[in-house]
Length: 233
Ligand SMILES: [Zn+2]
Image 1 (cartoon, rainbow, N blue to C red):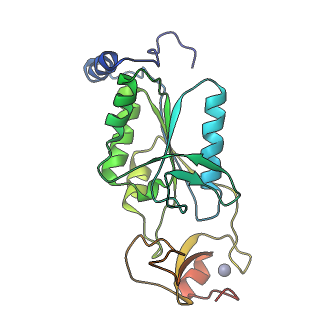
Image 2 (cartoon, helix red, strand yellow):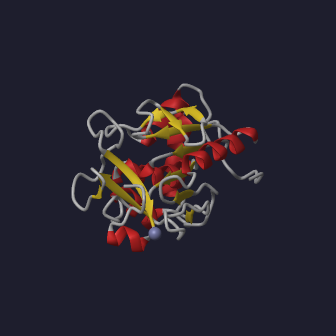
Image 3 (cartoon, rainbow, N blue to C red):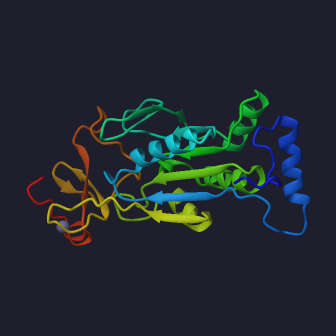
């Protein structure tokens, strides 16, 4: 990270388009920059948001500058909240938000930006994931994405699938979440009125006014498949 050939991290709007141009026109295809797209995934309650905030803290301590983004955080506000009580302001990733334009606008304002922390990345669009790759490849911005891999039916979220396809590194978060039976929790079951749901919208936020009787529970594969919730019915 101290290689002098790396471009300055504090680019002006003019510089960054020059860098993007250089990136496309360098021609020899050799590695010039060390930015990376990393995807950290795991079931609910495995500490993804906690790890996202820890990652932000670690990089900020080294003098790097980043933005923290989220989408549909459980607090339903523009912040990341964690189940162990941490909170951090965050930019809400709307459908229309272009991550590349966001970074470029910050650069144009004179801010330095070295990385993005993208929490709840499973709820982003596929286009957002393409923009993450663009930021890494052409703008030398690190992108650290955190999220669920699969939905309540155990099928991949589209954005998670794209992250598996494009990321430089994919890591399963190792903080173990257990099913009620003691086996490792792997899958996020949607529980509606005490029963594991098999059909419905891909994204429904539980414990809200609109979905008061919807909640989520992490189960092992065996009990996800059988729909057995143990005593948590
Ligand atoms: Zn189980």
